[in-house]
Image (cartoon, one colour):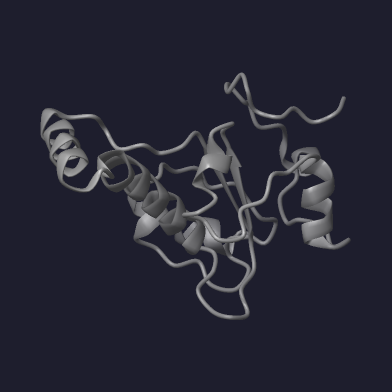
Length: 151
């Protein structure tokens, strides 16, 4: 991590939601400029979680909301929150999942992106990102529904 933080050219750091990189480390200032979440990080289904969901459905009518949606939203917020550690920090958070709009009530400021490239350029406001495919090579994307850059 320390080598990644010191790289003057910038770099890409990959991790998983719920893991140490997404929840246990701060990236102040411009150490982390963007978070891309591929897929909604729904909690692992277990017999215990299903029993709790059914109980909460019976008692509150909100079993799915409390046991599935809320933990997934928390994981998204934790991962995105790594780059926003002060009122001066800013970052670009992208969720690559067609179900993301259903989380709008959990994620303040969530907006659909029509043109990912234009949104990214607008975020960087003319300044060049420290990492770019042209300088560091392409990133392979195995997600079939992920937006593709123009040729």
